[in-house]
Image (cartoon, rainbow, N blue to C red; front, top):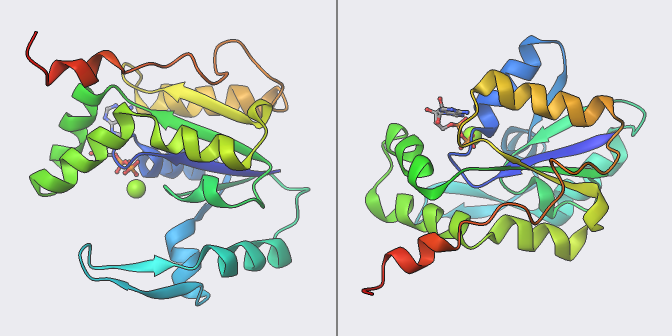
Length: 184
Ligand SMILES: Nc1ncnc2c1ncn2[C@@H]1O[C@H](COP(=O)(O)OP(=O)(O)O)[C@@H](O)[C@H]1O
Ligand SMILES: [Mg+2]
């Protein structure tokens, strides 16, 4: 089973992936995979990072990974790969996300861009364009420890990615945060 582990930067993908890896699960860091296998397409000068060629990456994964194994593909573009059979989106309340992004020591503009993206469900919207809703799961990490997030992911996996009430999409709503910036 090829599983996308995605989410806005700061939601905890890398931290939870490291924990799952320690527990013996197979994790692929998408950005590294893309760079190592030349699935890149120039450099994003503004962000000083390599741009991923999603089409090349999709083809590479299709050719090199078998769907018989449970593999988590970690990265904030993982849901853009149609190769992924299931998609797990980590979510985080914008106020908590701000705290987590501050730890990354990013500049204010980059932090704000990601808070805005999380608030308006950008990743979820992109995911539903490409994947059937029943294959997408959302985990609210706001009040969870990294260990608890890993446990939630494994709970979904162990139930063979059957639809669940707890993690089905559409339950998470940060829209009250949009109004925060407007005077009443
Ligand atoms: N569930 C969590 N609770 C509290 N802090 C977290 C949690 N998950 C991640 N963090 C912290 O938030 C920051 C961003 O996490 P990271 O794993 O780098 O996110 P991502 O890979 O999604 O960008 C790190 O400092 C990490 O330790
Ligand atoms: Mg990361």
